[in-house]
Structures are given as structure tokens and as C-alpha cells.
Length: 438
Image (cartoon, rainbow, N blue to C red):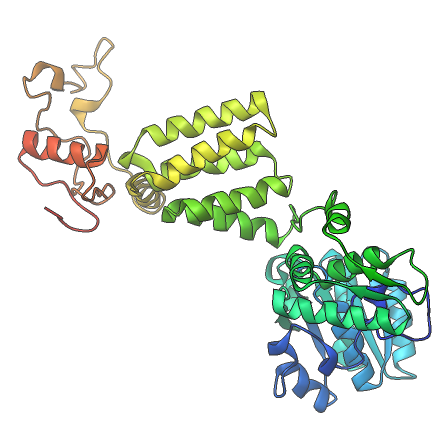
């Protein structure tokens, strides 16, 4: 499979991304921590004891390229398998080959391996028959068989920075120039291509190649803004709705709402919308945060979130983006209280781990004949007291603040007003998670 940075091997029809693949780690751009002198990968190569390696990161950042470069540096035959197509028979055939000559087995999308496939591969690696590198876009600690994770060194690759992506483009421009096609980009245009690649070098080089296609050797091509617009008109954003990026972006969106940063909320929301995320999913997350993070500080946040969820069911994109922004900004700008979330979590822990409390006799159902003979009675209704409250036990041996602790702060929120009301009526302080702020 073609991947980024393939140094030309005399194949004129190679895609640009494949023609620029590195032969050594020194030629890899944008993964300095992984390829630096003294790194784990370098030390293993120097000792000729690669073992089992898993490269983890988003698409187009050089996982296959690094694996090929390692094979070149170790002077081993590079044998590539795809997890969805390779069977146990293929793995065993590679083991037979490895007993004859040095082999590096590379498995793309290794997270798709079955436990049986992984067991066969691990047996080969543990015997020292062959070295192994797997590549995955999924979190290996959750997506790979545990046996494979425990026997492998996990190396995480990061998206390529814009500055490094410009170096990738420079390399691509030089390659095109050497083939007789001179492409002229302004610094701003190069920055746009680098930025819109989403950290994916293959995408950046494919864009550059698209701009150069159809021109004869000896041509000089001045790229215009109109040409860039045409290339990007239907280009999708780099957003995998089933992978780590989905979870990372939704996590950033949630934490930005919790942190009250409206700029970040709108940016991450735009990333989700532009990536084609289901508006109902986004609305569900906003509803959750309205209770989890805002809670009693502003009860209307949940009302807004529920209304938004109902509205996007009826409206959909593109107008749903406004409704989602409205609800997300309400959650972000509202004062925060996690007392409902923390309180129910503590109560559930107690219920799961402690003997159940008996229901006090005066709280038990007394709406049937014979209840009084069983001792059910004595309940006093707060509605019959002028204060709207009576001092009676509702849960025996329950200390105030064990579950509910107010998170009211300086803002005149519902929770703060409720604290003041109950302290005035009962003459008792309301337990506070962060202590009194009066």
C-alpha cells in the first residue's frame, strides 16, 4: 500500500506521497522524539533486537514509512500484511521464510487482528524468528489483544506540525522540480496547504500533486488561490468518527464547556459539525453537561439543552448548528456546580457497598388498613408547618454532607439562594464542598 515519503525507485508513475518515502529514520520529518539519537527505536535498531513494536497515531503521519525505514536500516526483507486480509496461513508462511532469511513483518491496521492471528504472530516474535511492527490508528491499550500489548513496545506518533508539514511540501516541490515540473507556491499558500492537511502528510502531498497534474515536463505552474479553492471544495476534514480523534475532539468540547471558554467551545463544536458528527450525538453530550457541570447553579441550562435536542431532531443541518451553539454556549457561560453529579455518585457507592438502611416507620406507606397496627405512622407534613419545613429524620444515621455538598460560589445562583433559604429556615449550615465563602 502506498504511504508517505517513498524515495523514488525508478517508478515514474508513483504517487508523490509514495515517491518520497524515507530509507532511514534520518529522512523522517515530524517525529523527532521517535527518531532522535538515543531513542528506544534507535537503540533497538543499533542492537539489532527490534522485537515487537506497535506504532500508534492518526493516518498519514508516517507509520508505514517508519516501518519500511527500519527494515532498510536492519537490512531485513520487509513483508507487509493487512489485518483484514491476512490469515493464519499467511503468517505461518512468513515464519517459514523468516527461518531462511531475515524478515521484518509489518501489519497495517493491526487493531483488526483476531486473537488467533495475534497468538500466531506472537509465537513467531517470541521465538525470535522475525521482528514485528504493527501500525494502528486506534488506542492500542483498548483496541489490541492484551497479549500483544503486553509483549510489545508501544510508540505513539504525533500529528505533524504546520512547520514540519511545510518541510514535507518543500521536499515534494523539489521532487516535482527534479521531474521537470516547477510548481510555484506563495508562502501563504504553502501555509494553507500545510494547515488544511490536518497533520496528515499524505494529504498535503496529494494536494500538491493534484495542483501539478496535467502539466508537461518543463512547465512552470503558478498556483492561484482559485486553484486551491477548487482542490479543497469537496475535501473532507480529517475527523474519524469511530477512532481516537472522535473521542479526543468530543473530550475537548466537553472540557471547554466545563471550563467556560466560549471560543474553544465554538471551535471544537465547529470541528464536530464540519466532520459530519450526528447533531443528535452532540445534543446528547450538551444535555449531560448541563446537569453534570452546571446542575443546580442554573437549572435553565438543562431546559435549553433538552430544547436543543428536540429542535435538532426536527431541523437538522445546516440550521441545527445555530441551535447546538446556543445550547453549548449556555452551558459554557453558566456558573458551575457538580453537586448533583458528585452526590449521586457517592450515594450509589454507599448503596452498593453498605448494608441497606431501614425505612423509618413514619416514612413507610400508611395508605392501607392495618398500617397503624404495624407502627406505620407519625409522619409530619411540611405543608402543615408555617415555615414549610419540620425537623424529622428522613434517613437514619445519615450525617449532613455525606452525599450532598453545595458547590454554590459567589454568584447569585439557584443553589446559593437555596443555601441561604435553608440555613434561614433550619438554623443549620448547609454542607459545602469547598467551605464557606461568606
